[in-house]
Amino acid sequence: MANLKSLAKETAIYGLSSIIGRFLNYLLVPLYTAKLSAASGGYGVITNVYALTAFMLVLLTYGMETGFFRFANKPGLNPTRVYSTILISVFTTSLLFFLLIFGNLNSVAGFLGYADHPEYIGIMAAVVALDAFQSIPFAWLRYKKKAIKFASLKLLFIIMSIGLNLLYFALLPSLYETHPEWVSSFYNPNVGVGYAFGINLVCTASITLLFWPELTGFRYVFDYRLWRQILSYSLPILILGLAGILNQTVDKIIFPFVYDGTEQAARAQLGIYGAASKIAMIMAMLIQAFRYAYEPFVFGKSAEKDNRETYAQAMKYFIIFSLMAFLAVMCYMDLLRYIIAPSYWDGLRVVPIVMLAEIFMGIYFNLSFWYKLTDKTYYGAWFSLAGCIVIVLMNILLVPIYGYMACAWAGVAGYGVCMLLSYFIGQREYPIHYDLHCIGRYTALVIILYSISTLIPTEWNLWLRLGINTVLMSIFVAYTVKHDFPLHQLPVIGKWFKKK
Image (cartoon, rainbow, N blue to C red):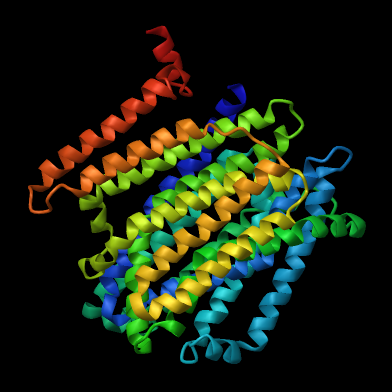
């Protein structure tokens, strides 16, 4: 239990920064959807370009983040030497990537459908190169358990981003209408969504400068032999990561190419899907927070005898809180839908489907450690590749018929395949006795409560619907507290309940 409390504490810190950051970032969704109508396709451009950059970020980190945790924790190896070697490697490849894109900018932009705005691609190439480089100092902070600085830098990025976006998408456009003569010197309405990408570059570059303490104070050494060992371990993770990020972004990347309609209509529909999916991102927040704490935790505890029991407990609690998050979002959808503009509300029907896919992805992440701990990372590559093939095929075959609904269900199918393959093969290679009976009970309870909430007539009074849904949420929370998470075991406040 002490191990789990330590994990919970770090997850709380990472989770706080992730949840607050994502919540603040949500402010950009109503801002973008209010200023960029669904019909304009502007938010579709943002959705598409950020999907491309997410894919390139995984490519440019090529599994080195996980490789760092694996080798920094190996007996006999100097963590600083591992850090230095990986830092030099990622910096070099990121720089080469940026130079390659910059040297062929017009060709790349034309291929991606942005021949009229190659600056979008150039700016985001710089952003993804800096992000890839930053991932290693961020990993160093996690390794050194500097969760506060980690969280502070993440939050600072979000605050800067929101401030500049409010300036360029709300304040300056308003001032431009009344005082164009002086506002035009630093604001041009024709730039439009380009400001979103430019702001990202400014914020990313600023955070990079704040890593100066993590980039100095030690002698840079590139250990070629060590690098080859890390690369050998990390390359299968790269394939795993590429397949994994494709599972998350391939629908948004290929949607404009396979949608049965005009380019403008495709971007409009993609914008609706992307905006609605943002509401489901509370699940991604939970998974991200858990991942930040869980990865160094697992590798640090890998030598302990009780590790498998600890992993099984962590899986159970992860699923419990994931199901709680799912139920909370669905019960309060009447309020959460106002995150996006009404012109995007047609896409709200994808939210429960996308959240289910996120749960499957989180479970798959938890299951993935058996092949990372046994150095059989090629299994993860095959699992993710299988899931990716399912997602790609479903998008190609079904998007022309069902539109963005096919994207949502393809995610469920793809992650479901990954999850099942990892579980059944993992039980053979590295058996962990998960509490399937308990997990099944919680799953059944959520299905029942969610089904009841869907039966509430939409014509009923809003507050009455919210009241009924609150009762449903309370039933789940009460069941959790009674059976599997007594209040006296909670970090910090648990002492108060013990006294009582």
